[in-house]
Image (cartoon, rainbow, N blue to C red; front, side, top):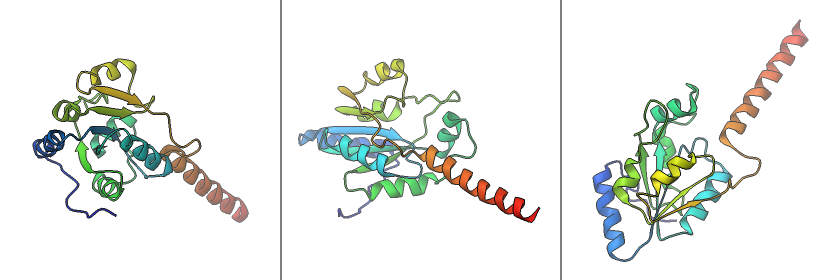
Length: 179
């Protein structure tokens, strides 16, 4: 396992200096962004596949505020942003983690991380951005790679909905027994 120096870099200017140093020595920079709420096998497979596209993987974690806006749901995220970033830094394939909070009131990312880092490759999924946003991202990255979902049956939303349904079914069954 990698030594965990401080791999969470919240200051974009500091992260930019680090990434530029990697570029000087010839490293290919890969960047991706997500909510990473309730980290599961699909997330980890995706991060491993993302890292395969370059030498240094920078992972943006959406802020709690941003997730509430674009998910249009006050119940998400389940895991607070500090803990989601900490979980990401423990993943061997992840080199640096940062917070992404430049999401407007309509839930659209404003590309701040991509503009500053100018990664060689930006990794996304088909569901993450509409085609016009993919085109916008291409202004800041040499290449955009769209990976398919990495888990057929597992998603954070599915886990949450299944768990809540099981608990509600159990509570209902108890109420029916008592009634």
